[in-house]
Image 1 (cartoon, rainbow, N blue to C red):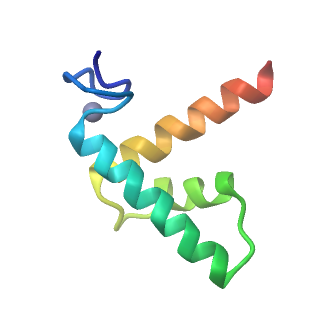
Image 2 (tube, helix red, strand yellow):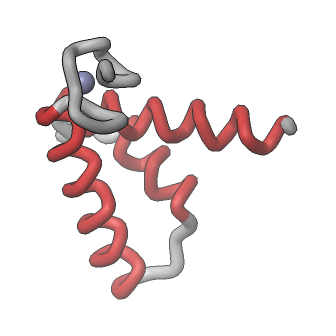
Image 3 (cartoon, rainbow, N blue to C red):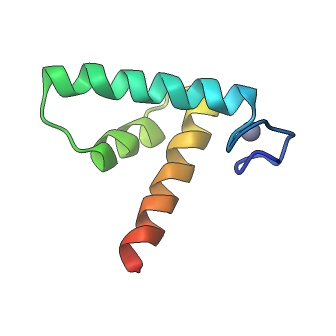
Length: 74
Ligand SMILES: [Zn+2]
């Protein structure tokens, strides 16, 4: 299997670096949800446009946004 984002070899949907970034996104969302009402989509958009987000995290956020946009069109 290869990473859906960068194509590197992966054991699951993402390679190790992107998997780690994905986990930190999920964790961050849990924290944000406690502090404010924000949708998953809005949260991802915040990450994608935040200049302080790391590259790996941004990759994953953009990927998830594109994916959820594609799912909505169905
Ligand atoms: Zn990757």
